[in-house]
Length: 262
Image (cartoon, rainbow, N blue to C red; front, side):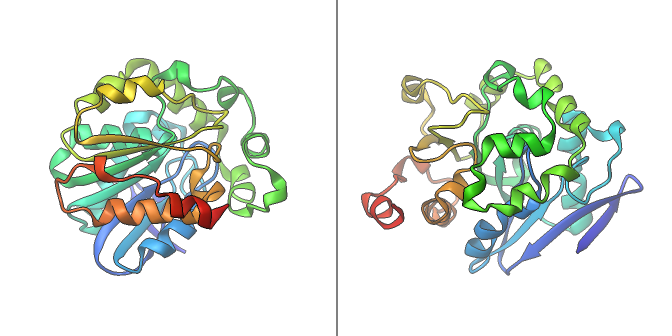
């Protein structure tokens, strides 16, 4: 287990591979661990990092840091402590919110970002996330028969106050406006059957700027990276292989991917 000390508290992270840096940020349920398949796939060409946010996994449980702005500053402090320069960001749920906020505040440090199940506002988040224990949330969001232990094992480590604090903080944030004003290439991924985050109406994607693209995983719920792992990792690889500044509009879920993973 790797860790750094930030604000006199422990932040846990893991790293794989060599090359340009990618940061994976987990969501409201689970920890860094469910990113392992994506990290392993990407680590062939990139140096991949995944960290546990304040209140999750093996990082410190200090309610003082649970506010959404503190979670965002955690990422900045982590990058400074590790000496990491320009990055690609991949965030899921809460991690997608942090990736968006970080890119809006520190655009010079971000080359591109991929958001997975990014809420458009607080109302697009199922209220159950705010009232249910982390382990019960894992059971709700995942079919246990799939044996996805990376979420079930880690879920009880989360402080429910960290989930509640971050969701409450979104009352003060216009995520939709921030996303539309991004200056960096952004790929937005949603699971068609996600019960936790309601994706924006498909017709809204028509009005997205050229450098922002939305893709829907029709067979996925809240965890596309686990529900359709091969397809997700292929899309991630294609997104990361784009030249800096290129629009992700050219990326599609190719028919052969769908046949391969069904």
